[in-house]
Length: 462
Ligand code: 4AD
Ligand code: MG
Image (cartoon, rainbow, N blue to C red):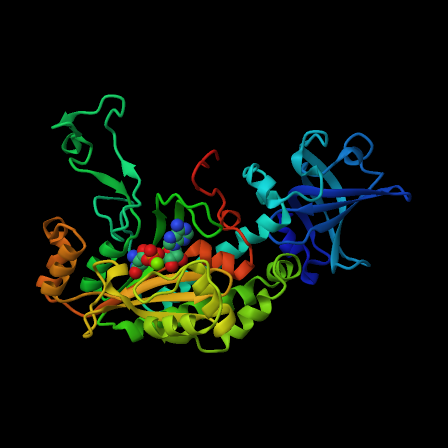
């Protein structure tokens, strides 16, 4: 007899098989006819398997009739055709109880809790329908990410988590140190990081891009996919202090090629989720965001709008809408502006490109107009920016002057400049925030509910 998943047991092909099922009780209902219905879930899918446990089972009175939500069981029995809504049910030959969950104390006994409340129970929330579905969809997206790049012969490279450079130049870094913070060594009144573990100030990475560029300019097409960290003190529904980012980087690629890659990449993820997680997606569509399946299906079949930043500013200035933040050429777009463009004006994903040089990092390629750089942001409804990327500056002299302009020390980036000294090539890449992608696909309103253990200001308990 084999242990099979609830997912497998719910398929009609399993009818007639003697199987073992292991999972957690969702509900128990006792029938007058001398048997009980147990709904068992094991996380393999949204749905439960219905188990019929007859009073003839030796532990029926002592144990089975005391089962409540959260108890763990192994059920051995035969899969039979069901008269109910589901295709199958299991007629138990035995029900072994592994662990009880006192209904007076088990927090998930009550049917519905708010997502805010469930955040306090990050250790129990994966046992709910919503968080199980989020975990499965997140997993599907990760598989899709790897499949997409592997099928296109990108190399998966691992970039470091600890780094000495601030790729984005925004100063949102978490320091990594082994110095005694109570009594650090000092030099001229300042903490002497030359005496720290790495002999220099070091931090958790905000992006693997600079290291990905090293590999792309040697091996052609690469991607990195890992955790990134930002100490930005913003309590929004779209920011985490620790999030996962996938960053492809391609040699001999320009901004148009980069946009093409980003667009086919997102479409592939959306298509895979629709195909591979139909039950979970139906749940999100019914319970979380009524338009998510329709939106994703429409996106897969249509082209993204590609709009220069300057044109977007014109649209925003002329649209007649009152924004909280003023719109002026040269300032960064706020999420209200981004959402207006993608939700209201174009009604589809938008790729904005050619942003002012003053608001973008040093590594982006300067355009001939000298005022803009080859940046691109992909904006989607509800979430806003989901991807940020650019064609990289491959000209040594321009790159050096951009660093000076942004008050960076070119000497500290000598290795990055070497990529332009030796066999420089045009190249481009971007970063997709994994959680923003999960948010968009599921329609979950808060980014803290699409990562198992959210790290935000003041929150790191679990
Ligand atoms: O636009 P960003 O800052 O771009 C970069 O880091 C580039 N180095 C990427 C590259 O070109 N290789 O971040 C990329 C994406 C954003 O579009 C967003 O989806 C996500 O990362 N992101 C965040 N997600 C959650 N919480 C945060 N605090 C995020 N900051 C960025
Ligand atoms: Mg960005």
